Each structure stands twice: as structure tokens, then as C-alpha cells.
Image 1 (cartoon, rainbow, N blue to C red):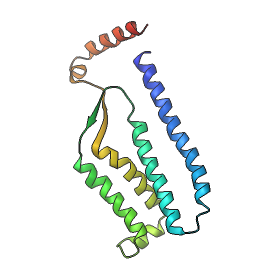
Image 2 (image 1 turned 135 degrees about the horizontal axis):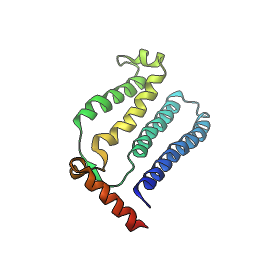
Image 3 (image 1 turned 90 degrees about the vertical axis):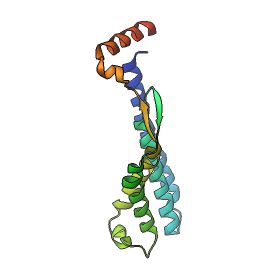
Image 4 (image 1 turned 120 degrees about the vertical axis):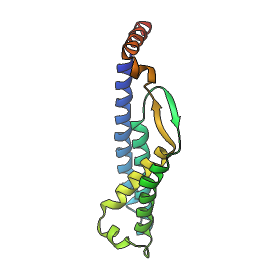
Length: 153
């Protein structure tokens, strides 16, 4: 299988993964709607939305190559901590911005998705697909791709 077909197949399965998550989430939310305690119901919903952010991260990080592991303090400070604060302020009554977050219902969902996406992004950035040689000598990488296609056939 050549590289383009493999990438297209990976993107299809990534889209399928996100769509399957949405369908499963619908049924889980239908079951959770029977919960009478509002706080537990909100925790279930926020947990599902955080899981959606994690699935979204892994769905966009498909590819071949070497997995890059690193710690990013900027992602931690700019994405994770504000999202975590918004979720804590949503549940904690005495915190600043609690009433403003309750008035605008989209903020907790955005914070949960960004927290789910930001936590794995703090520690990994996906796959390394392009080597430095491919950037400086693109004709060599094209020749290598043609050789790979001939070897696959």
C-alpha cells in the first residue's frame, strides 16, 4: 500500500473514531439523564467531553514515524491550567468567575474539550514524519517514495 492510500485510510479511521464516539456519547447521555443529582450529572457530562478531547487529540495524531515525547510547559500554562480552572470554577461555588461560567453554558464544554486535548499534547506532539533531509533535498524523498511504491507492488 503506498503512502497516500495509507494516509487516506488513517484519516478515514480517525473520522470514524470521532463519529463513533459521538454516537456512543449520545447513548451514554441518555442513560445519564436519569441521574437526579445535578452535580453528578454534570461530572458525567464533563468527563465525556474531556474524553472527547482526548479522542480528538489521538484522531488528529495518526501517522507513521517516530513518536515524539516531550514536556511542554507552554501548553500546560496556556491550555491545561485555564481549562482546569474553568472546570473547577464551574463546580466550586465560592470561586471567582463561578457565576459567569454558570451563565454561559458553553464555557465548561470548551474547557473540558481543551483539557482533554491539552493533557496528552503537554507530553507528546505526535509523530515525526519529515526528516531534515527531506526538507533540504526534496528530490531525494520523491525518489525514495517511488522506490517504496515499487517495493509495495
